[in-house]
Image 1 (tube, rainbow, N blue to C red):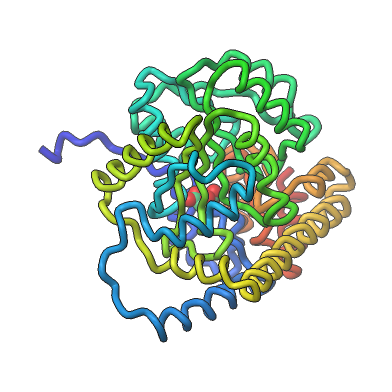
Image 2 (image 1 turned 120 degrees about the vertical axis):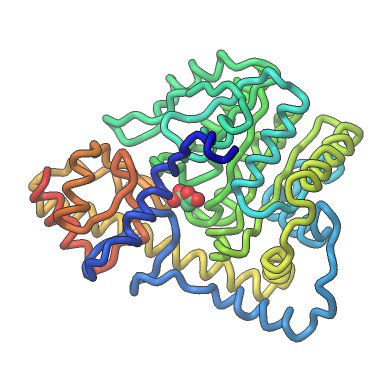
Length: 393
Ligand code: LMR
């Protein structure tokens, strides 16, 4: 039977990770997969995560199952982080899940249970797994225009035009902050206008929140999605803890569905819990427990925000340093827009042939469309990257 399997190719991010790992050159530069890196090129464990882990190690008495939906304390802590007081907790259904991709998967599956014919609207461009998951569940994918390559900012009129074609039963995937891959975010007035248009069409927002704190600040980065939660009868949020706690391999995440009434929320809760049971039964707990300790202890929470603040500053200063180095190397301000964007990623619009040359000749790794992970830059490699671009552009 297995000989009948169709061949499935990995998505562009995973494919690039594999090529990078197989490359034996010592001077290769990884600007590919979206993990945070410090000035030494390592992905450190947060000191708050270490502290919380020590506490758990000393005090945890059992590793028996938690509930199918995860630990209620994790629910409360992350619900507060994401929504604050923007919506009544009784209207929120939520389950812990293994990672942000699972959160997207469970929420899209939930939406399909309610609306089997609904379309999934995905920004053009977007993180490849949004389309990958939508395709895997057999949902029709519609693209909405998002990015203006001339200005390096959101093509908001085009986005609004496209979203005005959405309908009840559709899901519109939005990025809470640090849009992946463009680094171009909506401002608060634009979030308000998105709430208007979804209020009119009846489509449901699903906000992918993977980079809270990487844009303007932890709470500042929730303001857009909180606007939707306040103003719309229903919406969903996929919260990933991979980047914001640096717990990539622990698979820490929550799937939230905000319903119009507490009664509908209870039905959504049963739906989400059953999806957990059917797909993986119980969610992982270790990372969730670490996150809960950090979020609920005032001192640790402040220290965690300080850690995120340092990371945010490093990414912003890498952006400025790269723009400066490229201005000198290329004698043009073609890439000045990078300094205005936020988060780990921006796209340079490079085609595959150029990306191959950069990789093969210079050992510089970037994802398709020239998506570049700003945290992969260091004082040492910025001049090398700029020289590689100057040689190939
Ligand atoms: C990325 O966009 O590189 C990260 O979110 C990692 C992933 O799973 O794709």
